[in-house]
Length: 210
Image (cartoon, rainbow, N blue to C red; front, side, top):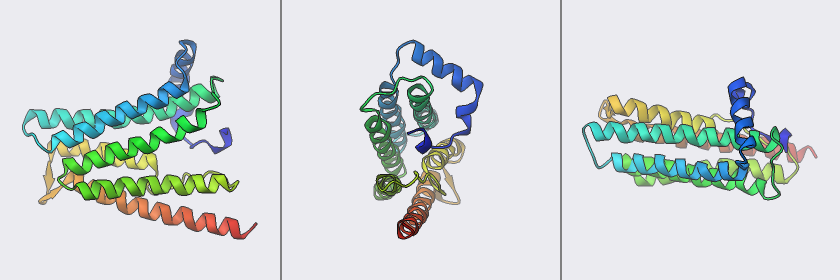
C-alpha cells in the first residue's frame, strides 16, 4: 500500500523518477528489481567476508565492492517500489518480493561483515536483530497499524553504517586497535535493539488504545 511505503527523500527527485520511468518502459518488473537486490547484497557480503583474508590493494578493492553492493541494494529498494507504484507495474505477489529479499539482503551483508571482521557471531547477531526490527514492523501492519519505519537503526541507517565502515576501513583497517567493521557491527546491533524496543513499545501502546 502506498501509505505504508518507507519515506525516502530521493524518491521525489527528478533523476529517480526518470530512471524509474525508463525501467518501467523497458519492462523491468519490480519483482525482478527486488530479486536483484539479493545479488547486490551477496556481492557486498562476499566482499566483506573475503576482505578479512587478504591485505594490500586487494583489501581496499574488496571493501569498495562491499560499499558499492550496499548502495546498489538500496537503489533496488528504491526503484522496485517506484516502478510498482508510480509505474503501475505492481503484481499480486509483489508484497512478498518487496519484503523477503530485504531480509535475505540484511543477513548476507551483516553476516559477511562479521566474518570479514573475524567476529562471525557478532555479524549473525546483528543480522538477527535487523530481521527482528522488520518483524515487529510487519507485526504492526498485520494488526492494521501504519508501518513503523522509525529508527534509530532502520534499513537506511544500517546500510549507511555498513557503507561508511567499508570506506573508512579502506584507509584505517583498525582504529585504536579496534576493527572498524566490528565497531560498525556493534553500532548496528545496539541501534537495532533500540529500534526493536521502540517499535515494540509504540505497537503495544497503539494496541491498548483500540
